[in-house]
Length: 483
Image (cartoon, rainbow, N blue to C red; front, top):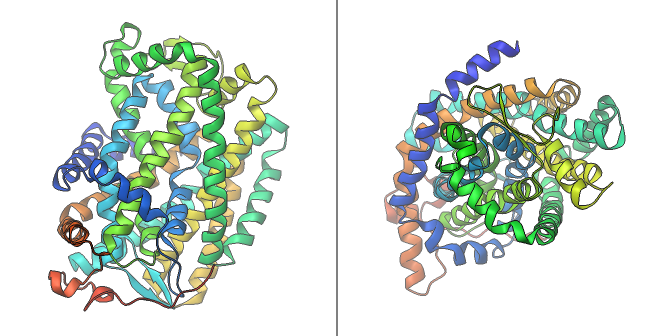
């Protein structure tokens, strides 16, 4: 089974595919005139504007749901794996992926807003919706929706629950099956409460967990302040083969940095647009910019926190170009993953590292499971419209997947997750390349109205964007709802 899954990953994540992801992000950056630099102020301001309504959530709630999906085990285990397989230079390529990925996140999230619809009184949107309405290709939309449900409800939850279970077992000697049952109980309590409960939990938990994790990383950096220059030099030199020790790992650094960067920040994957579409905003570009900033939060802050803890303390191993010889072997016998971060924190705070990382993993991975359910639910809503039974079945499917992931091997969990991610990336990247024009038009319209001193309001009819039914004849403000 694992051999077949790995061979499939060899196709989905072949070198050309990795470079295509980089090229797409760079293309969108150029077409949007590097909005990820020009509009940083707007990104931050827009996060805290807008309120929830009967049909949608606030911009901050939508950001929190998206960050729930972006900030997961990939920020801890994924970053460690990238360093283990690609060396410190992989961190630079994760940063590069975040910078250009912000433009990709803008495009896909803005498209989700432009082509969103109302189903059973709630905003729904995402790749399946913009593929059908924007491209007019129903079978392609259905294919994405089915793939997304397969990936998000069956293949990818195992990575999150597996990381939680292993972390709890290592830190507190709790059996993986017991952790699996706790995950199922808590997740069930939240997902049976609907999207508003998911949004409310996310907006409380996500900022708290991210800030706490970054704070510990900053403390470790201050404790090793004399290493700042050498660590940054190591990252940049290794990224381009200028560091002798990691000279043969440039290709691996790029490949693992891009792959784990995409897995972590999810730009281009097609997950972020689901949450983006749920926001109550007067212009699609507003939520597009907010979601672009979420990529920065995920990679430049949280992933960097992991990388700095590991590199500043030297608690990592790196495999050589032959895949067997160890270039760095500072943690003999320790598998690439949370163990690196645990060891790093232990060097600064003896007796604290294992527990801290286990609890961090729990919050990071659990909120990702919540986001996976919401995204799966959106695609089930697309496939079955208002039917209640498919939604009911979906809840049990993701709960079973989460429990199964908690007790299966880490290698298989990551391999299955990479398959799910790869399938979604392939389909979504094709779609947004074809459909990017409306997102570019929306950005220009947003900028034009801002220059006029207006609060931008979208009108798809005036802009000549077809099938954007919600925005036809202008934005219609929904009734507010305090949440």
